[in-house]
Length: 471
Ligand code: PM9
Image (tube, rainbow, N blue to C red):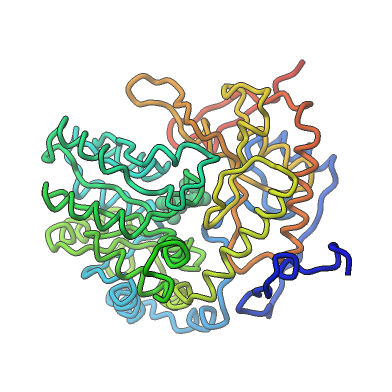
């Protein structure tokens, strides 16, 4: 048998895995011509967020709200209790979150940033620091809008795309100690801990790290709030990489991890397998009271928080499904499949391969472009032009401007993210994507970069417009 005829499993000397589901309904996809893509990208100001989805072939913009729901979830949609107050679906959702994540109190929200707004407003005093394991766009913005000052306390390895540290999401406890010594514990609102860390490449936090962080915070009376958006994927990495966890289920690991934190906010559009939804869960009654009161100002009543009853039912079922070991293994397996195809051509990317996406290292990809020519944004544009694949920038555009100086923030990581929706695409789609990345890589020296033509005030990566640098 030639190498080309062998399955990936055979090549690696083991049996292959397969998705624990089969396809019951399909949605047609259409390929555009190069000319159509050129026109569409020009109209979108070279920003993939401004493309119409009908002009996209394979959509790897985000894994947020793009999952395929199961037959059970769709059946659950028919059980929506659309009462304004006290919907039965809310109580089901509340007990499911309590069961799998272990927190006492639950406040539903329309999506993750609704919950980020509530927790930031509820617990940050103006001028307080919020140390976190790398920034996330919406999270930091809500912390800043509430008067907080974000401080990056992730380990240095997280900023190095080639470091093979197995837990690049870990908090550097010395950085936290130094901040406490400098500013005093009283001036720290809470630790903002994310598992996995999106902007670092979907990298996990170890159980040992969160346990030590808890001990340190207990000494100083500091609370820890978790961004649990992709915590199920984080639990899988712990099972795979951390001593003592190989025989524990993802669900058991998730519960233990959460037990070291005081609460969590969630974009249910990721791990939890729904197209819309979010929640905030808390252990302390005082914080819960504040959040529960504010939810009626910003989201809706405290028993729906911006979701329909049917959304809450689908979400409760999504939580049960997403913690199944086989599901997480195949979800991360597909991300790795794409990564392994790209690795064989030497395409630069963040290592180790993370949970939800391949993060191409645009700085190394276009090593002839300065960061001011937006290499990450340029690569996303070029991928779309080549084969209609939609990716997203995660570099200087996403980092925004420093609120004090007004200057661009230049992050060490200048990345382009190929984000894999859950249960949506097949291995053949991954192959088409990989070949497109390779084609763009082969002609990288011809690429000149972009300049920004329009910049909105908040979260500029969503709506900014660009023009190609000519010459
Ligand atoms: N993440 C993503 O594509 C959605 C669009 S970019 C803002 O990665 C984390 C870790 C996220 C996240 C969204 C949110 C906000 C919070 N934390 O989008 O408001 O990755 O539901 O969640 C996106 P919502």
